[in-house]
Length: 282
Image (cartoon, rainbow, N blue to C red; front, side):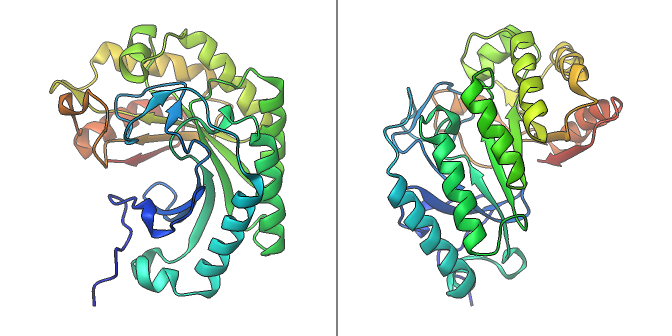
């Protein structure tokens, strides 16, 4: 019998939970059910990646977080997932396991001023459910605030919660970053932020690659990217290299298309020459 509104890697239907901050997805990269924490409920972010799947994305920071609401939602959802019929109703049999709590959502999570307190709440709730240390607590971030002491202190706390960071790095040149992420930053400055993050918490690089106007990344683009990440090859945990699984909601959407699995694997092979583990999700 087909599942009711079942979740898949291509359908991140957040209406399943009906909650403000907590939403479940089936994550192809996590390998099962990921419990998302969305702090950017106003769809505001300090970057604007052309492949972003957030509708009505705006520049900015999150509104104040209702911490008591977030904690209640996380407790309620964990109860539903672990002891109710959530998995049977919404998740294919092979994916019926909780893999992580993931700070992701509709913008940059670390831009919420309450972010340190949210980590404390997640730690407390996971301890109460006997899950602390048994599932990952992941931060999916653009890394733009990893030069702020308060954020780096939160990264050290995250590490104590069986945490890890997935740090966005989509291009190796200033022009490439501007084209993909719509921000004006120096690649070397971003690598320094990545080094700060690595020193505080186990960190993976996450990279999205796609074709723009039918053209894949050029050899020069790929070479610049590999030269940049070679600076951290001995300290990061690996690279999550992924393509487009769902449509962008940005103006550039008609110009974007997926790369073949073979194309991504060819890039991965070049990265592996650095001695890095690479996980490919076409």
